[in-house]
Image (cartoon, rainbow, N blue to C red; front, side):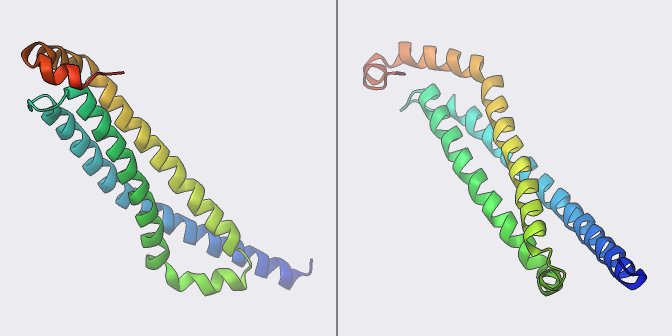
Length: 154
């Protein structure tokens, strides 16, 4: 490599490092907002499962977790679109530098890791509530035997 080519290569590397640092910073802030909100909502949903009389608390909790997973998937897609929109001015530069695919792959992996962890954190909230939900479900089944018969856990 000539000295000019080496200089251009180093400049491109520095630009990419700076871009990724800004993207990571943006994602960290936005993801923490999403994470905090979603974990609070799922906990509130599990709390409300114990308070109703029409359905099995455990069955409702399972449904709530299933909905949580769907919402997390939607949030993942929305944050990816948001990041791309927020940093859209870099798209052309990344194409010129021929790093667009690498940046997209990095972004996809970064978000996938974060949202996979969020799914697991939601599952942890559910398992942390398992004993309380089981007790509520047992009590509900004793209070409403006809509804319980129509709503088996299997």
